[in-house]
Length: 223
Image (cartoon, rainbow, N blue to C red; front, side):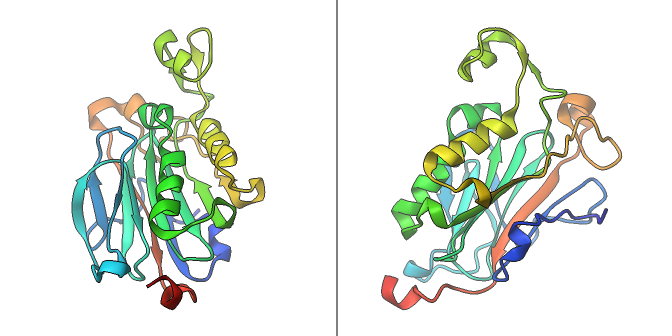
């Protein structure tokens, strides 16, 4: 295993660069756009080519998803059990990084991010490729009845957040073949992953990011 994990699916797109950090990775958010993450369903736009705002880096506000259409601008999030989800529109070259914990997932953050990509940049869900990175798996994620009910479960028990986000993307129109679940449990694998539930306040955070290297061929028609 390399220190930074890569999605086999997203690696097929030669116009992006991406990575899912591990506890072994020397990966920081320096030079990347980032967020003050608040476990919400809020998405923010950064480095919009239509306004001439490109090359943004640093914290751009409060929320849990970042979207950009600007080549060279990396959007990033930090996780330690919550799921990092990277999205790439293969037609319009719009990318997004999503931080999906149980609150964000219950608030349908990934569906909301796809909707905003459509509203702001014309992204069609059928053109989106998505990777759900390492997070706490259903094998280890016990939740109480109040949280369970938010996901249609009747009783306290184990919750599969990755699957809940996958279903949201399918319902939004992302083709099943365009979604990769990496199925790496952060709680199970202490050697490679930070886990807040396992390590509490001593847990570190892992950076995941995606960056478009080139703009789409439709740029001129969208301006």
